[in-house]
Length: 378
Image (cartoon, rainbow, N blue to C red):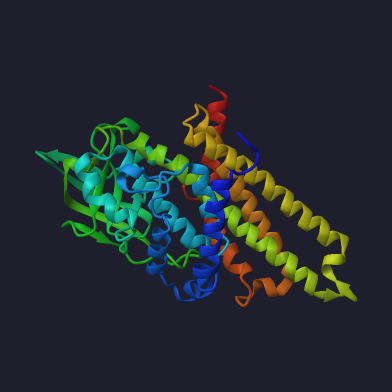
């Protein structure tokens, strides 16, 4: 791969940056403070194609690669990592429907998903099945041309707000090969939601439990064949991990830029604190680590687009490094702000809260290490 972006990729990046500057950055603090989910902003992103970045053109999507998706997520996270991550999840689940859905389901759902007229959640995690996702207990029992689905899903972004839910449920025996993926509608009888979770960050998007009590789901809403659901979910996560890593890069870049501006202005002991060598060394390390994580993530994105044999390993490596680095950069930016970094008058504390969860979701960073080690020792 080239170590530079193409002209087309730079155009995509510039478009996302302009959209962020106009529609996201000026409002992000208010969304966070008042726990506002800006649905109209998400629709505006979809008007630019950001709701279906790697959905195929045949289904109404833009059909770009995973590197372009990462560039978009990184740019939007510069303004608000929470909303960028929400749009990332919508893209991941929409792609799963496009790639593995049956024709009737694709025709029914994708036109609205592409425009973000309807939004979709990804439902894998359960109260008793987090990192051990293949141990999920939500069950789908087939009765004629329907499945009866019963169980609960935890920590679901968009729960209660979104109209559609890609749910991984057990249709067979124990383990990963007994899991299938189904598209469930919010208004189907038996679907309900828990109370909104009270979270450290990501205040601008809703998170709650999804409860399924004998929900009748048409067989035509299944993605792929019976027993393929876990593999489909993992393929979705290869891209989702890149996107959440990109969100960490964007948020961390914002905080590095804020730290540069603040330390140039703030004076102590008779000079700008940027003039102290310790400050310069800290900023240099932040910038270096961020660029290294960015290059790895971009390389992994190309591998996922090209379906390279080592794509899963590289996606795990990139997610782990980008999210760890992002949190570390933001923490050091807060430290450089001193007491002001701890105040809500400055954006640093919001990014500190929002980026922390990136090391947990889409597979914890401990699980990322397990994936890399497993691939290395095969």
